[in-house]
Each structure stands twice: as structure tokens, then as C-alpha cells.
Image 1 (cartoon, rainbow, N blue to C red):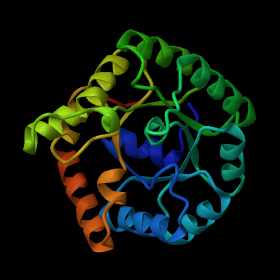
Image 2 (image 1 turned 90 degrees about the vertical axis):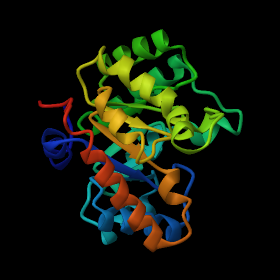
Image 3 (image 1 turned 180 degrees about the horizontal axis):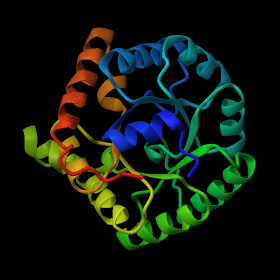
Image 4 (image 1 turned 135 degrees about the vertical axis):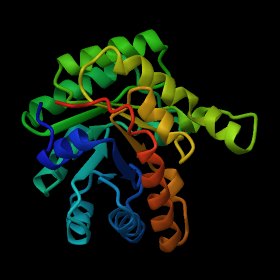
Length: 250
């Protein structure tokens, strides 16, 4: 696997926390606030939109490994040239409200194109939750065969909790938790469980087989940087509760 050395070390030591500023968030001030919160709050790495200018900005603010997200291989390659440590095809949640769907064939082709452009970079790929579970598992297997080093799950933005409080948080996370459970039993690469997670459900993600979690809106929608830092620290503490079942050791 071509996993970044610092990220691999973190995966071996225990679950990792990725803070996502947002694939459509290209506001330098907002990105900077999220990155600083991730750094000060104790996150393992950050995930930003694949723009060279944002990579340069982020590099000035933190020594954490930088992941960049896009749905166009050329954008990922440009961000790597600017200094990004690894790449993510996905964070598709931002596109569903626009009516944009990502089917298995397209995701697989994007993966192949990206691996051809970036043969040695760490590559993570999101499996669309709009697919049936059996299709998600099959796609994950194909993605690994095509060069994916990590798989990310999703599902929170289109889930519809019917309860409030803790039960509602669990309902919101159910799709991505279920995907992480199914996929982690089919492939040997690390699974990042993302989308719709909270401090309530992060330990569940680790328990079902995720090697780490990705959290975006719970942080990047906050208006206060102080609140962002506090929220990241709360997620870090929550993640420790799931360390009794580590899922990656190689």
C-alpha cells in the first residue's frame, strides 16, 4: 500500500480522525478556521478541496497530513503537485442535493484514471451509499483491485432520522455504519467511516470495523473557531471509547 507514513503510523496506533472542510468549500477563511481547529483539537489529518492554493494555505497552518478531495483526477493531480499528501475520490454527499449521482462504473473509472495519473500516492475512494449493500461491497473489492489504498463510507446527508436526541444521532449514522460493517469484512484495506457521525456514533464506527472516521459538517458548520476546536476535542475523546476493537495492524 502507498499510505502516507504518518497516516500509516497513526492507523497502527489506533483509530484516526479526519476533519473535512468540505469538497465545495473553497473559502480560504473558512478552510483556515477548520484546519486550525483540526490541528488544535487533536485530529489526525485534514481533508480539503483539491485546489493548489488551499493546499499551500493549509501547509502554512498545520503539520498534519493533508488529504484533498475531488471528483476529477486532474484536480487531484494538481493538488498533489502543490504538496498534498494523499487524495480522496469522493465526499459525494455535497453533490446529492444537486441531483448528481455517482454510480459504481463511474467511481471505478475515476479510480483507474486517478491511479494512472498518480501511481504512488495514497488513494482513498468513497463508496456511494446510494448503491445496495451487495453492490457497495462488490465495488469496494473492485476499487481495491484497481489501486485504492483506503475505502470511505458515507450516508449521513440523505438519512432521515425520525427521533431527536441520541436515538436520532444513531439513526442518522446508520447508513454509513452499516456500510462500514459490510465493507470491512470484504476487503483488507483500512475503512474510513464518514458522513453523519457524531461523538455518540464514532465509537460505534470503530466497533463495526472502521480504522478511522471522517467528520465534516459537525465542525465546518460552526460559526466560532473556539467552538470548532471544542467539537474536535470532543470527537477525539469519543473516538478513544472505540479503541477496544482496533481494525488495522499492518
